[in-house]
Image 1 (spheres, one colour):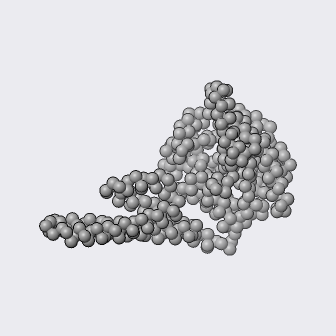
Image 2 (cartoon, helix red, strand yellow):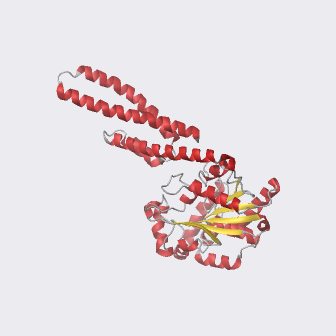
Image 3 (tube, helix red, strand yellow):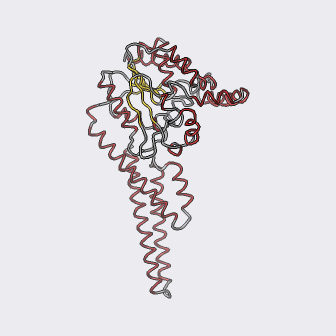
Length: 387
């Protein structure tokens, strides 16, 4: 990370120099032609020479920035290329790129300083390791970490982190049985005795089922659910009731085929979705009591508007709102609560915090909400509780 920031800092500085040179050249050329319009040849030669130098400076800076920045994202990179050939618009876009990168440098530098200052404290060194349990339609992957920059931040502050490694789409009980195997493997391999589960979305239901209905329950110290639909999603009931079975089966078949290629051995799209309905969750809650001795706590957040979430949450937000009220793009706020309240994150800067923001899926630095630090403090709190 520090190496990327150094590259980003150098590239951003080079682009700043390029912008200053271009603006200076434009001003000087304009002044010259205003005073001596008949003596243009020397200035054309000089301008051509400077253009070559500035081209080298620009491409050096922009390549360094493009390969090292996280916050630019695909959209700003594409816009930079698209507007690069349009005079004035290209300078304005470049200025925006520089501002984004400068803010990223400041944030990451402050983050590095903070972590260095508390390095010896190991504030995330919990008694039991942390098991991160993903939600539906994702798998744990080394290529694209479902949890974004969170695991790295936890480990830098002393945490030992494991992953659930269960199916992307399966019933709650099937996933619970996979988690049982995973937890028992971790306990047997490390001798840790128990794990602290931090579970996102459907993963929270999977974790509760594992605790209540499998032998893994005695090896779970805590379950912290992040934006989990404990009381289900009413919009899911509606759509499953309205969409013809033939359409559901066809779509499920395509998903299951793709999921098998990504590692699922027996994917079950329909069961996964049905277990998220309000009616199914009502039955699940009645049949799945909390296991004594386990700390249950919850976290929830809401978007303030559709545009607060990236695709597809910018589309689903309005639909979910019709059925479930205020929501994070997928789950209504009434559905989050189970166990002790740890945090409910309301609107920030007229933006809110989406379902994906809560796991750093987009690696976005959000104003007034540092998702990495949120998890650091969550782990620190578990440590303070002796877990």
